[in-house]
Structures are given as C-alpha cells and as structure tokens.
Length: 223
Image (cartoon, rainbow, N blue to C red; front, side, top):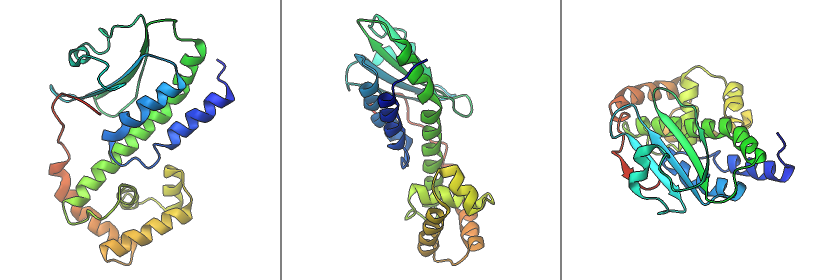
C-alpha cells in the first residue's frame, strides 16, 4: 500500500511526540488529535478495558463528541457510516483500541496502510509509558519520587542487568545519554555505583508492589 512521504513524516513526528511520555493517562490526549491530523475523520475514540469489571478508560476527540453509553458497545454504536479501528497489542488480558469514524466517504487504502504502519510504534509507546509509570509509582513509595519517569525506567533496566549499550538500544538513545541519566540517578539516590542504585531500586520495588494494582473505575474523560 502507498503512503506519501509527507504523511509518513508527520506520522514519525506523532510517534516522536510520545518518546518522553511518563504516564499512560496522557496517551489518548496526544494520539487522538495527532491521528485526526493524519486521517480525515469526524470522531476518534479510544478505549482501554482491563481484565476485571469496571477497569475501563475511554476518551473521544473532539472531546464530548460521543455519549458515554456508546463506550459500553466497544465502538459498535458510534453514529457514523464509515469506521476503521486498530487494536494496540498489550500484555495480559487488557484490550486497547482506537476507532476513527466519519459520515461521508469510506476510508482509503492509504488510510488503512498508514494505521497499519502506526499500530506497532503506538503500542510500544503505550507499553513504555505504562512501564515508566509503574516504575515511578514503586520508586515514590520509598522516597524516590524525585526520579523522573525516564530515570525510573533506566534504573529498572539497570536492575535487570542491562548494560548502558543495551539500555540505549532499548530506549532509542545514545549510551552517552544513558550515562548522563545514571549520573542524575546516583546524585538523587545519594549513591555512587550501579550496585548501590540497584539495591535501592530493589528495596523500593518490593515496598511498592502493593500500590501498582490500582485501576480507575469506568469513567468518561481523557485516558
């Protein structure tokens, strides 16, 4: 399928805008208007459903375009003639999806190709934001709240035994950038080595496991 270079360039900018997202709650607020600028449509909707009843996040763009009850039908009842949707792969039994709807003219092959290209990087950005958020929650339980989401993520990878080069590859940054983040982490934790930082991370991760299972109940608003 053909996608123009200009459209791909703008798609890359959308993905890049998610690079430093620390909280998955902000994902829909960036992605929905970003997709609206790439694919002409009347309404976009985002829904995230956890494995247990009531574990639902949803959002629409433009905000307030849809009735809250529509979400219960998983996009089925959106009042639009044409609709295209993508699911974002995620861990466990959680379901995450984005739907684009419009009243006139069906979606083109280029629209479908673009969404197919974007599906994997958007899913990766969402999973990355969730990981950073969980790491930050665990850190905050033991007095490590000064770490940014990126720093918490790097410390978590260090605790997994990753080298600076491996971390840089995973986060799409340079080893020099990873080293600079580690300097900031050491200073904030008051330690001088990877081993000491990992020891602090391990203690706080264990202390924070009880805080990482919270889900908001079903509600209308930004995901």
